Image (cartoon, rainbow, N blue to C red; front, side):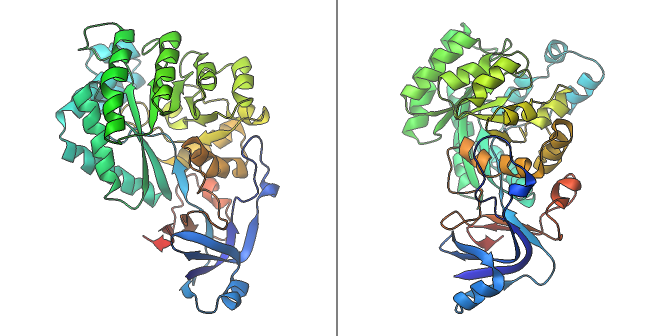
Length: 407
């Protein structure tokens, strides 16, 4: 067993509710703390000196300068398996071009589809691992990754196989999601409903057979898939045994209700969610995932995070790292900006990027520093945990531990 410490502060995030508001006064903060680990799990978190006396044979991982510790972060929504670059899209948006105009010029999601199709599986793996490494350096050790830039059987499977292979080459936890229903591809000869049926009949069985993903996502929007056909698709995916998540309410409201009705783990985006849908969402166990990076990238409003919490909902925050609308990929910067505009407490932000985000992925073994949890935690060289958000992402983790090992 190994004892790491002493820490100026350990913010355990233990004893906090899954749903609703959280005050900073509710945080459990252990001064002069230590973290005891064994076999990739947390054994005990408490006073360093007492733990040293209680477990005299433990190996000491001594912290000789002022640091704090807290659970490692979880990014519950990314698109970091992709080829190409869409910097021109961003420049054109800032020059006043519309989404349709950008698409006509060869930009938009279809541009990423073409570049991703052109990339080899090995090239996609290299890109995933490069981006995962950047996220680990931010203290993120659990990362959801979507397909959705292949949009046919062979290319979607190529993306998901690349994610599966990347999982074997990193210590981070990668959670794959099948987003074949990102939009109807331009080269598909048929209706949107026929394309969704093709996903159900041709792609999902192979995803199951090869154990490529346990989760299915769909983009419900006028430019993608309509509510009723999306609901039917999600119900069929659920019947296959997949967990569900939904790109919901990004530009128009209403689809978050579908997420709740089909029992989705999360409804993501929510920039256009209206008050009556907030009530509907908050009265469920579907996690509302805010994606401030997409708001910043597109110049759109932020998700109504404050209202969701005030109504008793479950809020998570993720990067939406993708090559088009959210290329930043910096979770703390995005979360701290969202906190400023939506008036979120530090405790609410930390909950939203740890155990509440893990819950959105169906993971209950992480995001909290307590006995039996996965020993993923991070340290910062500071004497006050409030500095993490105060510096808006410029304060980087000093050390990242995965399964109790410093990496």
